[in-house]
Image 1 (tube, rainbow, N blue to C red):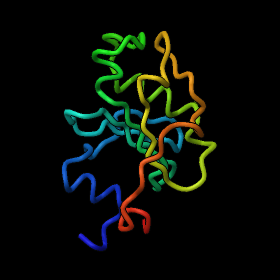
Image 2 (cartoon, rainbow, N blue to C red):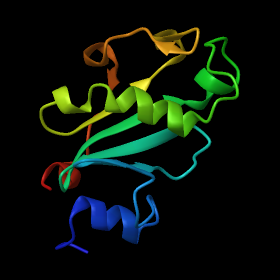
Image 3 (spheres, one colour):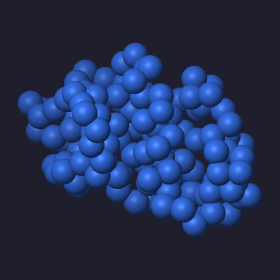
Length: 124
């Protein structure tokens, strides 16, 4: 698996599907696997992964954020596509319940919690 791109590794490990859930021009986005802690969408510009946007489950399941019963993956996609083109390099960003109000992201993406990346993933 060493010669595979990050996208190919994610497909191989069943973290994302082989085909994107959303595609607009050179932007492709994939629903991440379900976890008990967070939901995630992976964004690719061209062939490079630029963003893994996560939201804590508590932020959309129990906290009064206004997200409610919307499709959380579509919500993450809409939020992420609005700024992924502004980003340099690859980032993993986490949305907390305090970042969302009345169903809208209130925190600028540069102020979201950034999750450290594995060194292996940084070398794509």
